[in-house]
Image (cartoon, rainbow, N blue to C red; front, top):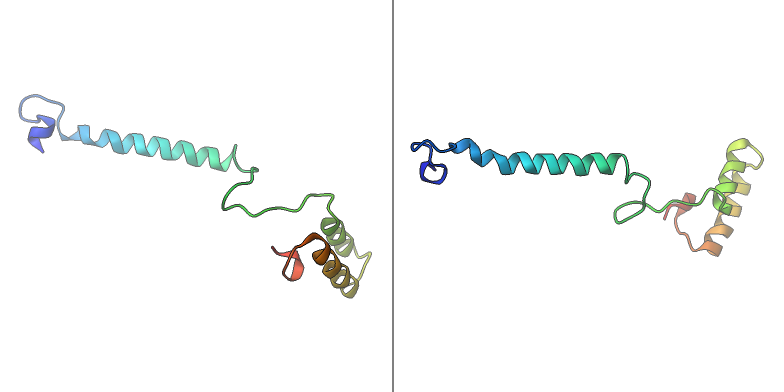
Length: 94
């Protein structure tokens, strides 16, 4: 290690080997910051697909939440929408 960093000959010393680690932390921190702020709303691999706000399934969910329809009617209509829009699973889970 002394020959690599030339510690004994007045070189920078072994601490010079920390620079790649510092750069890795800076780059990793930048990516983390971007993922938590700028890229948050974008879809991509590993992100669940969301239903549009004006889709029939969302409207049905809002009607059920506001009390316009009861639970039996909600599940009946949701099963029809699942068949029509190709979604699977109870509750509209993909």
